[in-house]
Image (tube, rainbow, N blue to C red; front, top):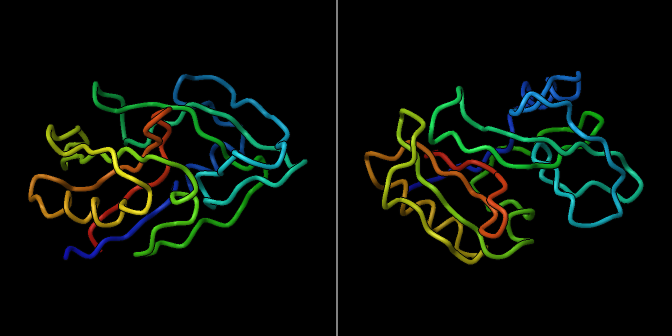
Length: 157
């Protein structure tokens, strides 16, 4: 089986938003206060605790705009948090919601047709590993199948 590695939003991108950078739509991220559940930070892959501030912003996890560079809403702690460690295990945040949408991308950062799949959260690792057996796939995004929000990225280890 293909060995895989899950990774969250890179710290340099999170730091830009914490420093006031505009989101993918050129807007200032919105600041909200967590009610205690359903607000998973894409940097530390933990829920923002009740009463803590968080950002809502449009996120494009691609190096540059292009037709396949999807943008979607995400949550991020408003204050710096530690990045979730890269791991071969499914992050608990991914397991906490059903179902998940997996999309395979080529080295040109474009969707590779036929490399997408909706799976149960528990099946994300096996499905991502299977997609990454294809030579034309460079990485996989894990997204919400209901809202298309970016959750994390999966690469070959």
